[in-house]
Image 1 (cartoon, rainbow, N blue to C red):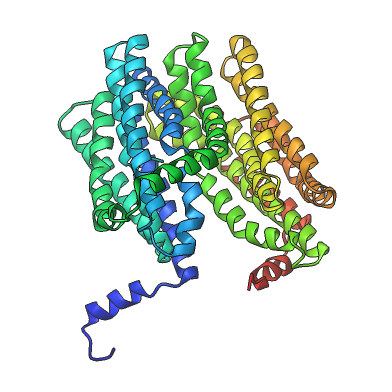
Image 2 (cartoon, rainbow, N blue to C red; image 1 turned 60 degrees about the vertical axis):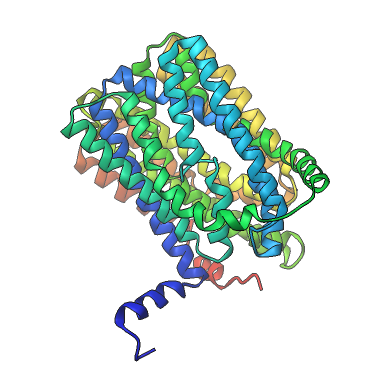
Length: 494
């Protein structure tokens, strides 16, 4: 290689990323996507009124729920076959692509038509533009995920995140030009920009692979059999996805339906989205731990190792969630002012929601444990329970207490879900998870006491001092010790 040009050597080094390097780069790129999403949101919220921002978030909620039908669980169904074959050039992938094209066309026609009939033609146009983002975007469930299987098979997950980052960077640039230079500050412009900026990344990903997928031959009878099999297998995944997405958008719908004006929708979504964006941390950690739990559950490791893994995973995500609570408590006011002075009084929503986010971190780990221990139907039951409790409480409380009632209802629903999950683990795992979480209580109690004493908007000095104190409590409680981290790093699946 010494005789090759420097540029060629650099290219070969990029091509030779291993699994560990690829995962690290993919995580870094995902964090960059989160930051770029924050930039896009700041440009939007600073450019339009609070009322129009609420309209934007309501439209996005409609598109997000509708996207579940576009997804239909097809990718989750075909992944095992694609992995086994080592290629996406399979008849089942072609059938899935044809089905998804039909679903995209149907949803992009019927949902905007329905929105237009209920809310007027302008709302129909906005929903159509939001669905276009879903159909072609890199952070959605449209056509692109089918072709993302190609890079994933070759161990190049970072390519998927690079293209998602390209989408967001183009969106931020075009939105800045449109809003700040040209002075066109409308929701229509923001959604049209988002839709158009997904196309370059979509074409870069799809065009090199489209021929391989489309040339996968099969008879008409074989295609019909594959289609029926896909529909039958995907229906449970569709139900679980719908419950999850509806639950994620529930608060926006409740605020829209309970006659609170759309400025409340804007305030709530602007405050929670920076916190929700951190969920990739919980997902990344739980996905790494899940294979070890799954293997241990099948008696490849001793029971003590399984109990320790469950406890360790819960404590790790609990600590990460608590650190996010600390950060938002000190920085929520500053972050909200980035969105404009009209949001400067909404920092309390972010601070309170960070506690809900801590519960969500625990739930993410709980879902992975239930899946790893072959309890998928119980995971679905938990999702339905959380949705039912949240819907009932939020509809009752929002009328009397506004956003505070909404947040309280969501918090109680997630507490109920955590209790449900622990009760549905195998008996020895439930007690291990519970004991691990209880070790967080001293640090949680210290932070709650500080927030009650100093309020939800502390001075920087107070925030730093309390943060150091809480971290000290965590260290003194020995919730995570270096020996445990080294023990986890030594685990091997092979």
